[in-house]
Image 1 (cartoon, rainbow, N blue to C red):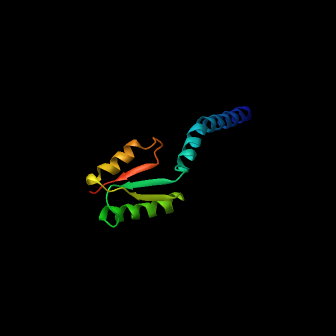
Image 2 (tube, helix red, strand yellow):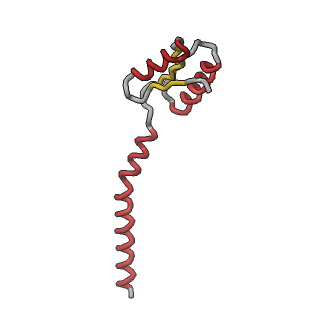
Image 3 (cartoon, rainbow, N blue to C red):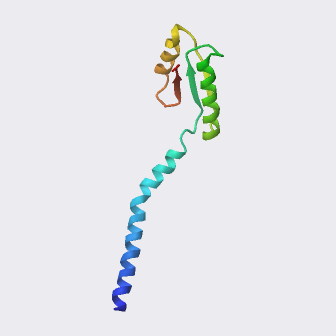
Length: 104
């Protein structure tokens, strides 16, 4: 009976070790996801400074800056009802650091 209990302890220890090894890639991906973004982020507003869209974008930027500890800037690019700003975002580098804020 003592041999059986000792064998079960080893099997349990092995299964815990195997589960930990299997979970390691998942945990490392979660840790890497929590560090994003690591470079400055910009929010492009297609309207003039002082507009309601600009004010809400600046409030979002402030909260994101506090949450991410990464500089989040708001860039106003007015013209053509927001189309110029949308074009700037579309032509920006595909590094997921530029976002467009449009009115609701």
